[in-house]
Amino acid sequence: IPAIDYFIADPYVLPATAQEYYTEKIWRLPQTYIAVDGFEVGVPTLRRDQLNIPNDAIIYLSSQRGYKRHPETVRLQMQILKQVPNSFFLIKGKAEAEAIKNFFNQIAEEEGVECDRLRFLPEVALESIHRANLGIADIVLDTYPYNGATTTLETLWMGIPIVTKVGQQFAARNSYTMMINSGITEGIAWNDQQYLEWGIRLGKDANLRQQIAWKLRQSRQSAPLWNGRQFTREIEKAFQVISNK
Image 1: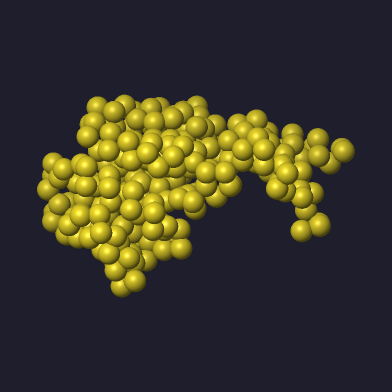
Image 2: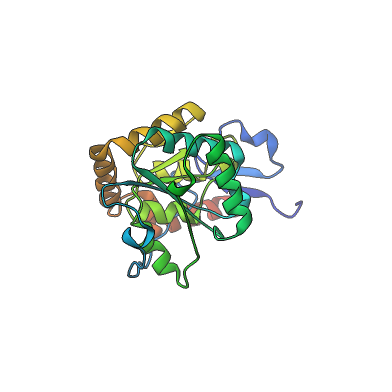
């Protein structure tokens, strides 16, 4: 768009070589292109017994719209599930739609995963309840090549480990920059094999999950992702410099 001169980014959400693909000048803020001061979290309405999931089971979760779901990423998610005994996969985001169910069930069958290990969750009325219900998950599996954005912010705020694959485009690096700016690198994958390895490792290593959860809780105090004031100062400074050019 000729009227737009600058594109706001940060050191992570776009690769160093991205400028040649943009007509706008990429302006990188020092740490993060986004920050929030936290979220309102309601009272959870989702329980394991409602879903017929044992208390000692490992729960993976993906909460994305259907258009973000790529067959090859879902295939990786099924392979993770297959390698982690006593694990279940919760799917949310218009997941009650028959097409979504058929999509996941078909890939699960192809990968040798029992379809009764999948749970398709309906939408809830309030976003605060949606966030509270995220707490049922042990690990979130991100989508690719279209990562989560708000859903990743919510996952990190709730202290839940997440596995994401990093690509070359903005939409494939959202979770990457958010994880870096919340102080964790555990779960960042640069290829399919690493995505598998992180998903399996986090499913089997309760101590690692606890360490990540602790780091994320601590990050609320100082991490750039949760510091709206600092972000405001940085973007104000950017606007001042840009306006003087």
